[in-house]
Length: 153
Image 1 (cartoon, rainbow, N blue to C red):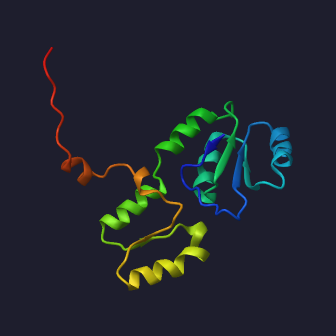
Image 2: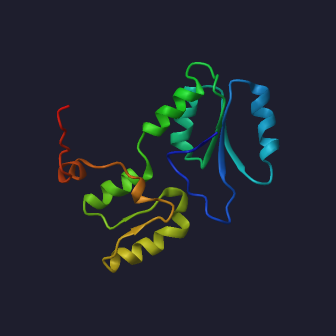
């Protein structure tokens, strides 16, 4: 099970959105029963490549994945998802480009008006589920930091 890197936007009153990934159809059929009442299953896939596509399309909060899926195993799929762009990276890029806000699609109903009001007041707004401290350093961040020095042994 992994926390989805693309989005974790469920609010406190919303059920977490779960994507299931398993190479065994019987498990894909049984797993939603174990999550009933607590989570909303938004998709089911049978291999790692389908997982990558559906995770990008659905932006689940949690992904339950089998590590022995066909075509691309769950461990490699998780690695690839972790290395993909995260909302914090997009938000940082938007701010660096002069934008005043960043709203994630799953929070459009709750965040768009506050973001618009903030922009009209010349204040930044970032959906509260996006943590800018999780953004990867930009090339500007890297050029501003001192170069480490090493001592010869």
